Length: 406
Image (cartoon, rainbow, N blue to C red; front, top):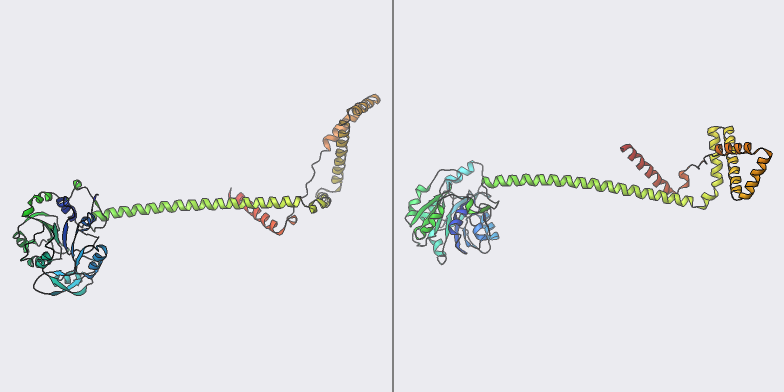
C-alpha cells in the first residue's frame, strides 16, 4: 500500500520515514483539527494505526467523532492551573485559540469567533490516562500556547518516541521555540529537524530514529499527495486537474451536440422516407381503385380540352389524325406480321400493278410522323384522401427545403 500524504507541511511523510517499521502504532494529536484536511494522522490511520485526538472546538470534535468512530476524542484544552478557560473558536480554520492577544489579531483581520468555555486537562493527566500504550509520536499544535501545554507536563514519566511541536507564531515565520525548548530537552529529547513550521524531537531512548530526519521529504520517500492539504503543491495540482476536467467537459459537450445533430438528421430522413412511402401507398390505392378506372375516359376528355386550349383546335385535329393513322398502321402491321403468307401475296400484287414503291414510301412517312406521345392525365390532389393530401403537401415542403439547402 502506497503512502498518501495529507498533512499541510509533509509532517506525516517525515514521521512515516522514521516509523514505517512499526505495525499498528499509536499516536496522540493535540490540536488535531479536521480528520482529513491537513491531517497528520490520516495517513497513519489508513495504515491501521490508532490514537487519541485532543480537540477543544465543537466543530472539529464532531467531525473527528464522525470520521474516526474507533478512536478517542478528548474535547478539552491542555494546560495547567485552571479547570476551564475561555476559548475563541474560529470555525473552518486552524486559528482557534485561548490566547486573547492572538484572538484579537484574528478578529482585527476580519475573522469571526465563537466564544466557548472548555474544560482543561494537564498533559500529565493525558499521558497517564494512556500509559498502557506505547506512544510512537505526539504532535502539539495549539496556536501559540505550546509553552502552556509543555509546562503542564511535570510528573508523568511517559515519553513519546517523537515529538512534533509547532514552533512559529500563527500566520508568521517568527520562531517561538526559545520559550519552551529547554523544557523538552530536559526530558531527554534531542532536536532532530525543523521544517519551517514545526520542530521535531526524538527521545534519547530511540536515538536510532534521528537518522530519519537528516533531509527533507524527497522522491525516495515514495509518497503521493492526497489532495486534501492546503499547501501550494496541492493547489497547483488541483488547478491543473480542474482545467483538465473543464476541457474534458467541453469535449464531451461537443460530442453530445454532434450526436444530437446526427440523431436529428436521421430522424428527419426517416420521417421523410415514411412520408414518401405513405404517399406512394395512397397513390397506389388510388390507381387501383374502381373510381380511377371508371373516370379514365373523363380524364382523357379533360386532358384533350386542356391541350386544345393550349395549342388550338387545328393543331389538335392534325395531331388526332396522325395518332389515328399511327394506330391503324400499327394494327395493319401487326395483322400482316402475324400472317406472312398473306403479307407476301399483298406485296406481290402491289408490285404487279406498279405501286409498291409509292405505298411503301407513304407508309414509312406516316409511321415516322404518326408516333405521338400519349399525354398522361395530370395528377391532382383531389384524387387523394384528406390524410393523403396532408402527407403529399408535407413531402413537397420537405423536397423544397432540401432543394434550397443544396
